[in-house]
Image (cartoon, rainbow, N blue to C red):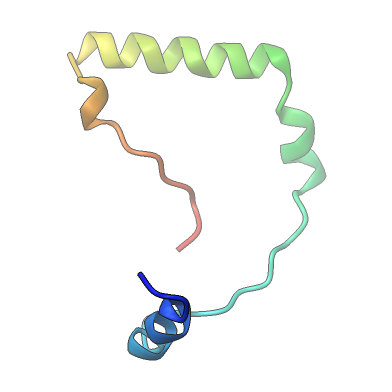
Length: 66
């Protein structure tokens, strides 16, 4: 990787790259994130992983964008 790798990457993949503006977090979603809901989420996730015997290396981080 050289000094100008980002420029070359953008030139090569310009047809696949898009620019998007971020939007502020909706107030309902912001209020939903609290210690109780966070703990409940991780508990449900852990139970699901154990129930279906999903190994850690088979889990992936994704978001709802894209």
